[in-house]
Structures are given as structure tokens and as C-alpha cells.
Image (cartoon, rainbow, N blue to C red; front, side, top):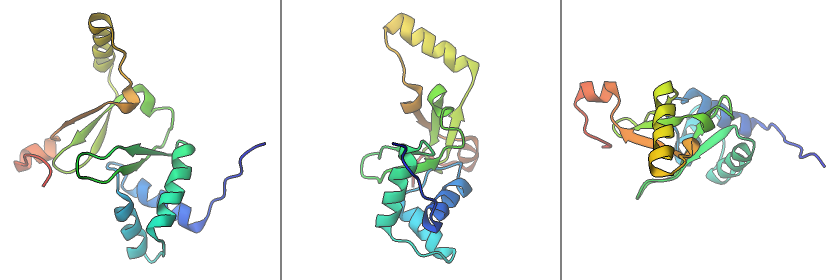
Length: 142
């Protein structure tokens, strides 16, 4: 039996909020606030429910929380794409960057050959500072 998916106004608003902030993941509270600020009406429970559905469809990616922080969610334009590369997270502004370059494939090969460890790129996250934050003299999350 095929699972039916419904496209409600609230689900569309959640997806649009994530798409608008595609360079950084958002918390449930940020998504809720964005929708409500833009004239929509949605509660946190509804956002959680729709995020779970979007996660199962591969349209949204969930980043596990850092110590003392909430989980964040990011729109995935091509669900199969993120499994093939690592990600960078700026500790200054919170921006996520897709690290899709040939050199990282060489790093993965080295890790496997020298350390007998296969990296799960979809779960790999390197944390540091982006160029803009470095120029501004930021040192990490405020």
C-alpha cells in the first residue's frame, strides 16, 4: 500500500521557511516564529509533526543538538546529494556549507586505507569559522 502525503498550508509554510534559510538550519522555535511573523498561524507541535514527515521523505535534514542546544533542521534540495559529501558549520554565524570537492574524497580514501574506518559523509560535520566571521573577528557562537 502506497503512503499518501498531504500538502497542507502549514506544511508548505514550514518548507518555505526552511528553503528561505537554506544556508543555515533552523530550530523548531525559529521556524514557528518565521511563519507566525509572516502572517501564518502554526504551533510548535504542528511544526514538529510536519518536520517528522519531511524527514521521512528526505526533504529535510536534522542536525543533532550540540550540548545545551536544540536540534536544527535544514531543507534538502536533492535528498541523495548530502550523503556524498561532508558539511561545514560556522560556529560564528551558524551557517552550514556543503563540502563537495574531490580533495575530501582523497581524505576519505586515506582514512579508510590508513585507519580502516569508513566515514559516513551524511553524518560528518566539521566546525570552524567561515570567511565572513573571520573577517569580523568572531571567535565562535555568541
